[in-house]
Length: 263
Image 1 (cartoon, rainbow, N blue to C red):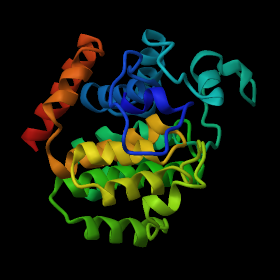
Image 2 (image 1 turned 30 degrees about the horizontal axis):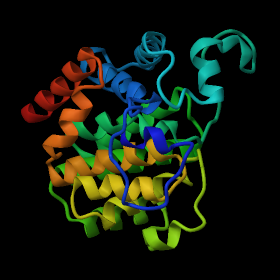
Image 3 (image 1 turned 45 degrees about the vertical axis):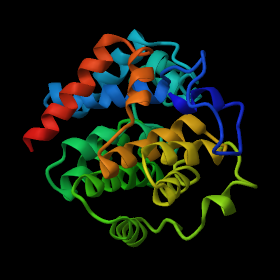
């Protein structure tokens, strides 16, 4: 939500208002809730995930940012995607949509292997390219490890050794030349670096926005890991969010938290 107004109007600084009148939930938000709904309320089959993604998109067809081109076709007009059968099939995407929607996989998993498996499955109904799956798995793994109290260095080491991302850069090094990038490989490492440099939840979000690029997705990934790691979101942020999202979304957030407490 914080990144929503900066997605197509990048701001290369951490000094900006977190919320303005236009700030609102985005396609990233809606699809994150769809995956959470799938994990909590279904048998977790691929068919159930497809049903949840489509149902949530139909209920929220015009969030800020809008759904990406191929994904929008998959959601609303599957007959326009090859092989033109009208069936919804994965389309080898490595877009960052797989990473931005998978946060709940890291929150509900009981083991790192389960987090990786759930993330893979949450991605591959659409984003079945290896990079699309990798982006989702790296995000879910970071959230799971942060939830478990692992250090930033342990999380960084695992991500580098498992997925091969370059996490040696700094936000200051990335920021000057970074531009809009909708790929997993051009978004997930940058989002994770913003988390690693942060000192608390709010600074993580500010760093994510300051990079430019696909701001709402960067913040969706960065914020997911930051919440799990710092275990605290400032009250002024929660208050602003609660005023802008429908009640059913707030209920689902509570369900994920309640589920997590039982693990």
